[in-house]
Image 1 (cartoon, helix red, strand yellow):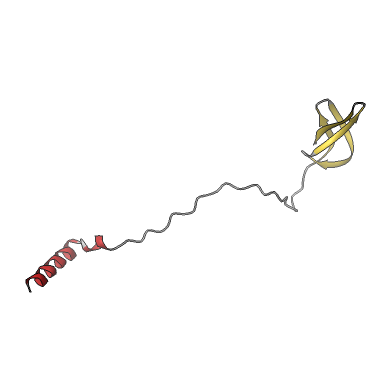
Image 2 (cartoon, one colour; image 1 turned 120 degrees about the horizontal axis):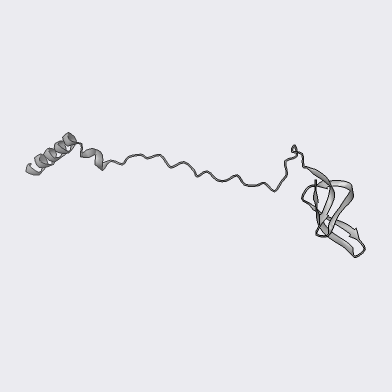
Length: 90
């Protein structure tokens, strides 16, 4: 009987002083997911217009092309020494 009274007295003291709330777990919401940088998509947007160019720039000069191509793609200029690789610019 003495142990049950002692237990009740301890339980009452814990409830009175708020120590019982320490024993219970508290819910903490999970942290928000990290904000990731926008990843470049390898697939072009079909609704976005790509700038086109008619000139091919090489280390040796510029030549004009017969058809327009997307800016930044590879091209070649024909010279007396042969084909010289370059890049299309506007």
